[in-house]
Length: 262
Ligand SMILES: [Zn+2]
Image 1 (tube, rainbow, N blue to C red):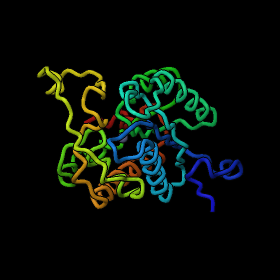
Image 2: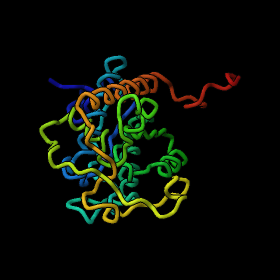
Image 3: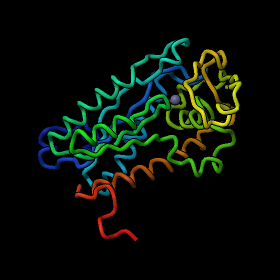
Image 4: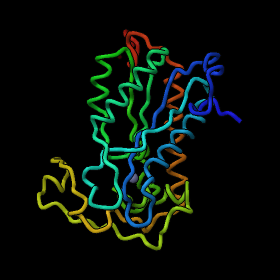
C-alpha cells in the first residue's frame, strides 16, 4: 500500500497528478542519550512525529508530503561519549539549501523543517534563503510545541534525555529503552549567575557536566505521558500544515493581507 504523504513511497505518476504544496523535512542528530535511550533517538522520534503529523494533515488536504529526514546534526560538544556523529551547521545548511532549491524548481515554495535536536539552528539559514530565493521556510522545534502544557503532563523540567524524551521513546519504541540502566541526569551547574539564569548563553561541553551524557531526570517517565505529549504536538503541527497548504503565496504571505491591520 502506497502512502502518498510519504515522499519515498510515492511515484512520478502520482506526483504529476497531485503536486504537493508543502514539503516537510525532519532534522535531527545521532548522539548518546543517558545510558538507556538509543543513539538514533532524535532521528527516530522526529521522523515518526513528522510522518504522523503529515498523515493527519494529508487526510484534510492532500497537498502535504513528508521527506526523508537528515539523520545527523551539530554534535561537536558531545564527542567525548560513544558515539556521536558531528555534522557542522554550515553543512546542514548547504544540504537544506539544495533541497529547498530542488523543491522550488517544481513550484513547491513552502518548506517546513521539523527539528528534533537542540544543537541545530536554522534561523540564519532561513533568513538568508528567503532573501536569495522565492521560497518560504519554517522551523518547528517539536519538543517546544507543547511548552504551555508541559507542567500538566510532566513532573521534572526537561533538558537532554530527560522525562519528556524518555516518555516519548517509551511510547514510540519501548523495546529500545533500557530503563534499568538510566542514570539521574544530575549535571554540574554553571559558576556564573548570568548563565544559570539563562540571559547569557554558551555551548556546553557535555563531558564536563557528568559521566552519562544527560542533563535531566528521566525517572518519572511513562509511555502514557509520552503518548499525551505526542498527541498534542502532532495535532498542533498537522493543524499548521493544513493551514499552510490551503494558503496561496501572495504578496503579503505569511502575514495577514494588507488592509486587515486593526
Ligand atoms: Zn534527543
